[in-house]
Amino acid sequence: MSQRLSHYDKSIHSGSYVSIITPSLQSEQDLDPLDEPNPQPKDEAKILVKLVGPVMITTFLEFLPGFMSIILAGNMDSPQSQHYVDAATFSITILNMTSLSVGLGLASALDTLCSQAHGAKRYEKIGIYFQTGVIVLTVTLIPMLFVNAFTEPILKWLGQDAEVASYAGEFSRWMLPGVPCLFLYELTRKVLQAQNIMTPL
Image 1 (cartoon, rainbow, N blue to C red):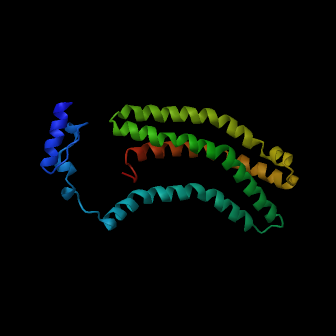
Image 2 (image 1 turned 180 degrees about the vertical axis):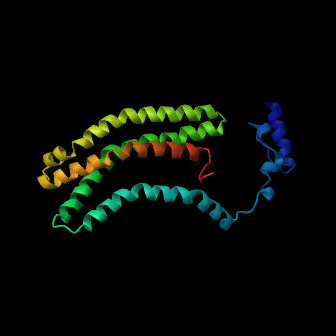
Image 3 (image 1 turned 90 degrees about the vertical axis):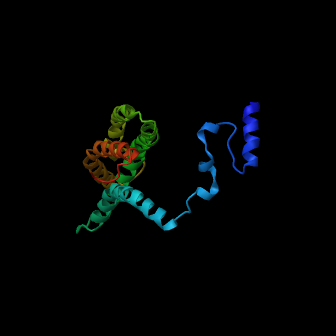
């Protein structure tokens, strides 16, 4: 301990700083403020946009189908168009609350786990985490599909119009096959992002 303190005292007189806790991990060159590069906001912004851009686009495309479904239902030339819009809105809301929010929330665990595994160069762990994510989401998918399959009675129990509830139930049944595909895509996307793979090879 005295040797570390004496080393610290010498570094003060020499005009540089060396940590007394982990001196081997730091050097005078690393800690010299004159050697630090000047920040270049424009260059950093370009790099950030290049990294974040693909993620923003894919996230936007994930939410686009539900939004477009409501728009298309509203543009149908039918006296029941208002009921179609209401049904699509109810169906998508229940799907988001009971399925997508839960599934995407569970999948977000891979952001941390896979990034840590990649940083530690334990690449085999990434595959294990991916397989675990598939199993977990497959198990949780069963109650999700069960709840959304009964969208019609749920809406009727909540006091909604019977015709709107019927349309919403049918709409939900057509939306359900895409949920497992979305979860699998989300897991794959997070695994690739953790390895800094943002664009097609």
